[in-house]
Image 1 (tube, one colour):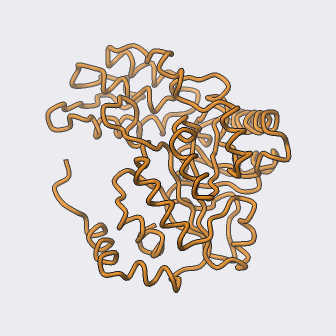
Image 2 (tube, rainbow, N blue to C red):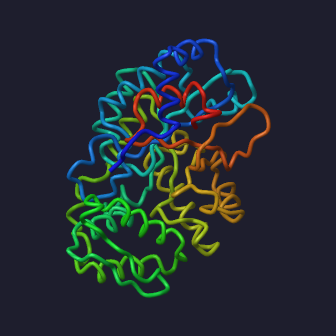
Length: 341
């Protein structure tokens, strides 16, 4: 449980309450492209899946969209080059990762009604064959277990503690185990999840839990036809840099082919976002695969914004929007990305 506001939160509230955010949003304190990334829209209360994936409630997302639409130019991937050449002074791009169904049921109506575009990066395998993804399944196991520690093999980190008194939501435990998963070689990722299931004594998450977890291709086509953009996010959402070169190529090639098949080669965009998205989540092999399969732009996920001029087309920064971000913080992030993004 949080006991107080951080210095960053206090500063963002001071800027907002003083009126400086509104004043400077008119004059512009930055130039370039700010990409804000979401995963899920709604409430994580009572959910057993990964709470960190709920980025905002529908009410908060609606307020965020209204703020952006009133002050910035909202773009899709088709205008990235124009922004980075300096022809557009300030642009904001909204993006969503994975393909959760609440992107369609909750986020899409808000975006459509506001006339605001967003880019949805899809893990095509979850749309083709719905299943519970590794991060949600690990969280489900930890929140479902009655044990206070997970005894994993040494190669997977050994013992992980679960403290239901100090951490009733299992936030610390889930983040710790997920962090460890992301460092495991790709060929051992499945064994890691199986080891957590055994250590927790829960078994695997029921397949039925995924029945309405993801969008359908019909939903994605409807969003595309209403002005949204669709991009790639691999086929099965592995940490790409943990895979062998041929496996990386297969993930990206299959994602590209499924997007083209379902949306048409002219409709699927040339944009891609890296699963996990940290600096070590992709490498030179990944970049080569993206270029080979027609993805011109690729987005990372460790904060920041892109100034005009020189840029890395396969490492365009994105800033996470998380449920802890209130409206004063959100406004500060968009007005002063130099400090808050």
